[in-house]
Image (cartoon, rainbow, N blue to C red; front, side, top):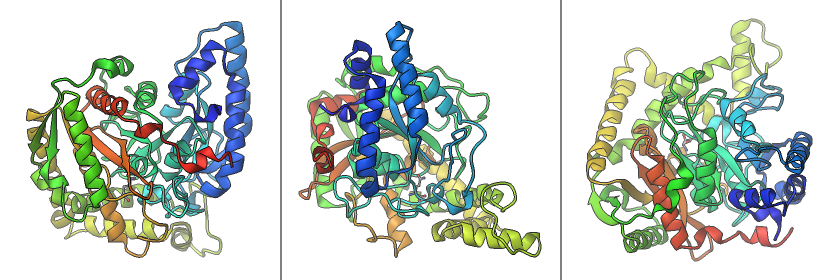
Amino acid sequence: MEPSTLTIHEARRKLRAGELGAEALIRSYLARIDAINPKLGAYLTVTRDSALARAQAVDRRIAKGEPLGPLEGIPLAIKDVICTKGVPTSCGSKILTGFIPPYDATVILRLQAAGAVILGKTNMDEFAMGSSTENSAFFPTRNPWDLDRVPGGSSGGSAAAVAGDLCAGALGTDTGGSIRQPAALSGVVGLKPTYGRVSRYGLVAFASSLDQIGPLTKDVRDAALLLEAIAGHDPLDSTSADRPIPDYQAVLGEGIEGLRIGVPEEYFVEGMDREVEDAVTEAIRVLEKLGARVERVSLPHTKYAVATYYLIAPAEASSNLARYDGVKYGLRAPGGKDLIQVYGRTRAGGFGPEVKRRIMLGTYALSAGYYEAYYGKAQRVRTLIKRDFETAFGKVDLIVTPTSPSAAFRLGEKTADPLEMYLSDIFTISANLAALPAISIPCGFTPRGLPIGLQLIGRALDEATLLRGAHAYEQATDWHRRRPPLAGTGT
Ligand code: GLN
């Protein structure tokens, strides 16, 4: 078996048992990246030399019998919105041309402390705005299951890298669905932790009240392993929760006998693809067979979620992105006669169309005279959406929904119509607005062979139950074991 196809927990076991060397593992990924990344466009930067050097150090540690970290020697890919010391961090944007962070994000330091090896930085929609990775300023990423289709977004590079066996696992970020939707469209597991569970120090901000970092992996056990490594309080992020991290590995085997699972009627709406609906309905039956008690719940404000998100997220983005002025970081357009011209030219040339659209939407929503009508109102609706979940979680332990209304769409299919693109996140946005943890796991395939995702949403800070439910379903099915044709050809 090719080492690059291993899950994190399998590779970990083999490394410890001496059946596989860390350098051999890294070389297997680097060879695959050389062969496949030109087609897939998953990586923007590959940190070949540092990855090899770290892997050699791991082999020396293993040979000496030194104590090993929980992720010792595991090759991971990082979305290019997370700062990595000495390695370019572009956010998929031209405006950060030449930006090399002088420090590592907290999640990077934690992964390295656990022994992980960073393989490189992955492609994304510019500043994480998008659902297809077509808004990357560099090139789109393609879906390993069908190269004419998108991998989802905005963490599409990370999802495609995991699905295509170009890394053992990856980090993405999720503001309105950007971990879960690409996980669903690419056939992998994607977990958005509770807001505050994972430090965002060193994450380039998009919408600060919504952004979270989380894992994309080949199975649920791997998601638990990665979450355990990156979660926890960080004094450098004032929004990070000072709460203990449970032993996620330990709860996985507990099963779901008696667990109460809610199915929200508002999530089974017209416009959803028939094949998605069928796969999710069947998945609910599987959960029931495993001993869960399934009941209907109502989240009546769901229909306002997309509109609410597209006021709050652009408003926060318009403020966060004000810092790209051609003075402090990255690109500075030449020829400006005064400061205002430097700002104008740099931002006009440095940002792509979707980022400009969001900045304009957000600036408008925050402007004097409109603030209350748009931003203020959106904040109040956000509270109603949160309350819907509080009521539902009075009755049930988990909520189950589709992750995305359709499977992977074709490149170019939705680029002409931003609204159509925004609707890809109709099922994922509410969890961000309500600050709740949610996971997407594979739950079937369309007749064309495209993956379908099942979403589970949990109570705040209760990733343990979320992982337990997801793991029980996964172990009862074999969707997560299917590999895209690309992965089998050795090309
Ligand atoms: N697709 C959504 C957007 O474009 C969500 C993006 C994200 O979660 N970063 O804003």
